Image: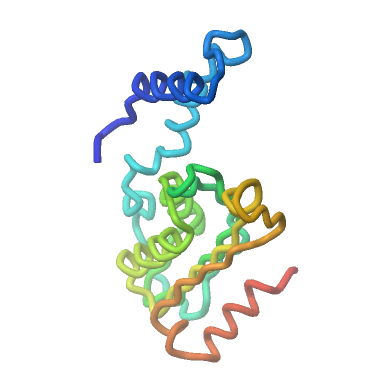
Amino acid sequence: MTNAIDRDRIVRAVREILVAIGEDPDREGLKNTPSRVASLYEEVFSGLHADPAAVLGDAYSERYNEIVMVRDIPFSSLCEHHLLPFVGQAHVAYIPNGHVLGLSKLARVVDVFAARPQMQERLTNQVADLIEQHLQPKGVAVIMEATHTCMTIRGVKKSGSITITSALRGTFLKDERTRNEVMALIRKKL
C-alpha cells in the first residue's frame, strides 16, 4: 500500500477513460472532470491511509455491563468490484468488560473502514474485529444495511433492494437471549 493517492495519475486515467468512451475530455462540461474525480477519490478512499485503531483512542474504566449501542450510523463506501457507491446504516453494539469507548469512536471507525474500496461483508467484520481486539468486550455486534448501486443502476437493476450483513462476537454469538436483545434494540424506533 502506498502512502498517498497519486492525484496526477488519476487525472490522466480519467481523461483516458473519457476518450475511451468516445467523449471529448476538452469540451466545456468535461474539462475539469478528471480533476474532480481525483478530488473525489482522495476523499472517498482516505481510509486507505488512516489507522482505524488510532481512531478508537483510549478506553475509559467503567463498571457498566449492559449493551452499549450506537444505532443508525450513516455510511457510504465504494464497492470494490465496480467502484460504485453503496450507502446505508451501521448499528454497532458491545458489552463492556470494564472499559468503554467514547460513543463517537464507534461512528468514526465505521467511517475509516468505509473510506476504502470495500465489500459490505468485509466492512462489517473489520469494524467488529477492531472493537473486539481494542476493547476486549464481552461481546460485539455489528449489523449493516445498505443499498448497492451496482445492483440498482446496472446488472439486475433491483431498485429498493437492501443488503444486510452481521458480525457477532462473544456473548452476542453464543447467547441467544443477548443476541435477541441487541436485534430488538436495532429494530426499535424510539
